[in-house]
Length: 370
Image (tube, rainbow, N blue to C red; front, side, top):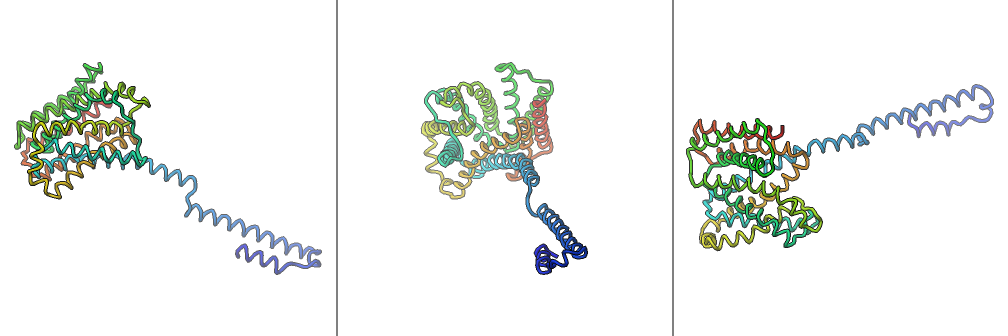
């Protein structure tokens, strides 16, 4: 019996005054009232059970919010790893598979895409970019010169060396950076860090000796890239505070640094293309007439910017410790993908050197955390 039906019974079977004057009539009325009260309690309990089952309450909202917070690091970490792996693979395809011999032009094109995308995001209000001035540009110029050298040396090394060996040789950057921290910032490294660096040196030497596709030019470019990357990291730490003081707001966020680096690299790239005569090659080569080449090159430009944003997102979701460890673990899929996709000739000693180098990178990251 529903509440509406119960009210209809009470109204249509209303006792007359004579019935109310005796005890029997009163008992009938009390029974009807009690029955109505129990029916309402039953309906209320049933409604609450239905609401808890089908409608979100505060506790459910908190659980949903908690699940989003738990999935945040996982999603951001996956986005960072995918963009990082894809960027290296696409650069390798452009430089090696298409045999494109204009690394400066490729860097210029990628950085131009990054500038345009950040400018659009700034105009749309999705990101906030600091207003630049000449004082900030003068302070940032040494960092940008190293940044351009780092990008170019990385591209040229990737053209001549397979992806797995590039990844292993990049461990030398950690060694140079750690030594620079000792002399520039008086930062002491623990014994675990030095042990991990020794392992990385062994893996790099053994990897080079056993590399069936060894190329002296490529290894020279990669060694230069390690020094420039370490110099970029160390110089950035020194310049950061001074750069912030050169802005009107007294701060410089990561998006502004990305735009500043890419924007200042454009005139450097144009000057180098003209001086080295690379523009003649770009105009005359047949590969620039291939539509798929431009698709891959453009995608690599977007991925370069994606790495910047996903790394900032992942760092915000987790912290420097997790970010460093995942960055080291990320070398594993990059190396394996490079070996498989490009059919790299491989020997058992070389494979062992690569795996040992990857393991040394993870040990180094964990040692830096302690």
